[in-house]
Image 1 (spheres, rainbow, N blue to C red):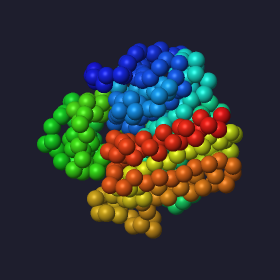
Image 2 (image 1 turned 90 degrees about the horizontal axis):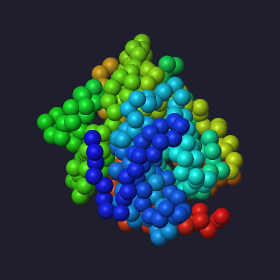
Image 3 (image 1 turned 120 degrees about the horizontal axis):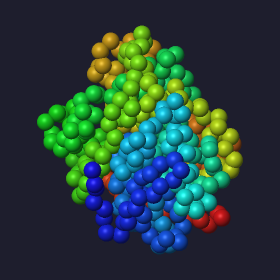
Length: 358
């Protein structure tokens, strides 16, 4: 599926030793690089307005990640490596573009990928900006501020928790609103931003969502049955399994990163996807009565995603790093689209802060 780009955005196919994919560029070729990392059920298209708003002299670079958009569909996501396929792909892209150091900004799953990038090659990251990132402990299957497994097999995380109608409708290219629980347009306009907001480029962003690669080895990935509630545990393929805490390294490598790039964490005050009571987390859905057989909050509490992130970043700062948390009111999961002036003011100030510290 081809998604049109805005004037000022150049789309090129870039091939590295790891992946062939579409990459969007803005700004001068010799500008200070800013790497944009998109989230799940989206593509680089989501970043175009933010790229065009970059300060003068900066070069925006936004690839379609493995498993998304214009990336080679033959290249699958090995979930048993956690976020490492993505992190390795982005390092290979920087190498291919002869970029030694870059600012990096990630949204949702893109933020989860950046946690891994900080672990893997922190010296190459000038600044880090996270918009509504996934918890450093993963998505689903953990409890408490220290991210302890809720179940020993991490049941309730991974590809099996996705409403199966959603990827079916994605694969069919559905652009309607007939299914109030799973129509891609309904999901996007209900959860990506706070209703009644609808972006001017709704159709392009829906096309971006629909461009994700769908299948048992793609999105949502495979799963295995479990004796533990809610009855499914992670499989080994695709992005949702890759975000399971089963395959992530924990936070010590993040806390021990050297050097520690400065982190700006921006989140929408009314995000329903990444929150301490997420409507995409089995613990949250069970507590709210949406999933039958819920064993109770003492057995399977909601994952405190935001509080986990704050606790980890406080430890990051205590070990010599720096972070600031900014909350944008009246915004959902994508404040850079919903409230671009507020987001960009914070983002650009952070970019300048990083540039001035060089």
